[in-house]
Length: 210
Image 1 (cartoon, one colour):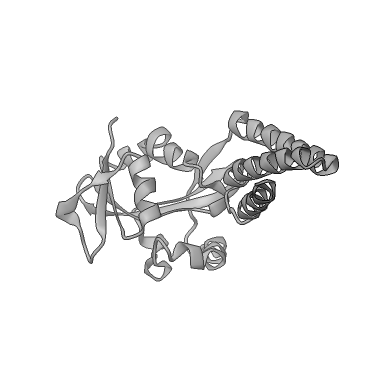
Image 2: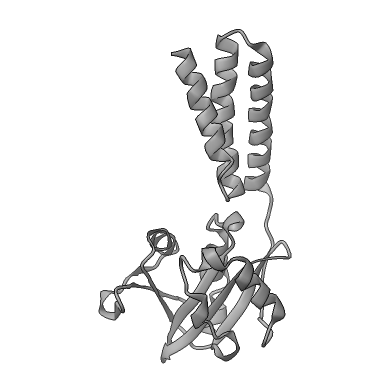
């Protein structure tokens, strides 16, 4: 049984190292290092037990900082023919295409577009276009994997909703066929809007209140 416990700890630690989200990495690594520490003490391997107990404490420290450090967000309009945006799209192209086809982007002629800065770092970008009066279609709402902890979404759709309201948009819609994206949309307060489903993609909608 102890040998299996060691295998389990090794697998959990290995899984933690493939997490793109820093927060998920810390949580899973905390779980793995705690199991490893227990395993080390149970088999009498004090160096293994002490080292992994120390790693667990370090993970707790950084998780505490993550949950208690205030992040600073800001939106920044995207310049026309932005060279940085081209590089951004190219760098994250494979991941972006899981959610939005980059070939369809036309930022320069969009009705709403901006970068999302998190602690001065460009961590995502948003592009939307008018469908009809009061309704904006989200063509891109992308956040780099490291920052996918829902804070960016809450900032845009709650704290900064006046970006849309000031332009006369009281509802936002978007289309998706990606299960992870659907979970994100539901978490942000979007609901299914079956009447506007399109091309085998499900439509989600959120209504903004002043």
